[in-house]
Amino acid sequence: MITFLDQNFSQLNDFFTQKTFSKIFILVDENTHEYCLPLLLGNLETEISFEILEVESGEEMKNIQTVNQLWEILTEMQADRKALIINLGGGVITDMGGFIASTYKRGISFINIPTTLLSMCDASIGGKTGIDLMHYKNMVGTFSFPEQIFVYPQFLETLPYTELRSGFAEMLKHGLIADKTHWENLIQIQKIDTEGVFPHIQTSMDIKQNVVEKDFNEKNIRKTLNFGHTIGHAIESLCLEKETPILHGEAVALGMICETHLSFLEGLISQEESELIIENIRKYYSFIDLSDFKEENIFNLLLNDKKNVESKINFSLLSGIGSCVFDYECTTENIQKSLDFYKKMSGF
Image 1 (cartoon, rainbow, N blue to C red):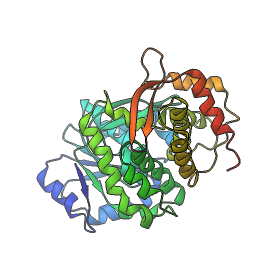
Image 2 (spheres, helix red, strand yellow; image 1 turned 120 degrees about the vertical axis):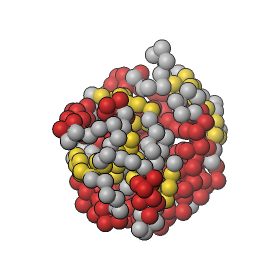
Image 3 (tube, rainbow, N blue to C red; image 1 turned 135 degrees about the horizontal axis):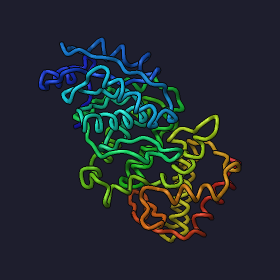
């Protein structure tokens, strides 16, 4: 399922010799078109014809309008059910590209070649595809595995620091929910750069993959991967309405701080553990001002979270460093306290 590519992309070329596709469509944004596509095409060895599909970068493009345009382009180009889509990009590209492939003509094959840390360690793994609906994150989507995930870590060298930091949040989450040693190794990193994170990428990918293999359709343990995302997605969704949306990892870091404090308020972890976790997350992430957001709007988004049942807000919360509980219903009072706790942290 997950294959690390060598300098010549030989594993990818071997994949094409073992498969029969009528045509290849490579989905990119303007950034991966410029920085990653030339390397892919320079090493691609196949007689299969291909087309490049380019969309604008950004979470705001992950919507049904963009998807509809790409469905129409695939139809105009006479893509049949034996066509293949290569999703070359970050989380937006792999989420949306997988959704397009899994729905076009009731499903065609796709592979993911993640180019960001976020996509390598999280978004490209697990078979979740999706797009945003209005300002609700990943509200429409499918569970559909890619044929293969090919990882070329050198793509990380094309990323700005903010993108690396965004993906690093998901790595921290993996440690907090499943592997205390992984967490302890990550918080020793003084500077988030390719050299610092590279040795830990495989561990994060394995954590995500192991959880997915146990619970593909997210009926139980896979929900632990949502730690930090209930509140994080709500804030990220609200920021989509602003001129400068925040990156996914920044929202997840905020969410992990709030939900760690919430874990303490609910008696699942000690105050000492809570403070230790929050202190280490704060080392890497700046404060996000929530003063423009009405509490009513935040709670409305929390009530629309996909994990909820019968209008009850279900959280995945920490029961220790390296362990997590899911389907945990919190009191409204404690949710509010966790948000207030974050708002008082503006000094860091």
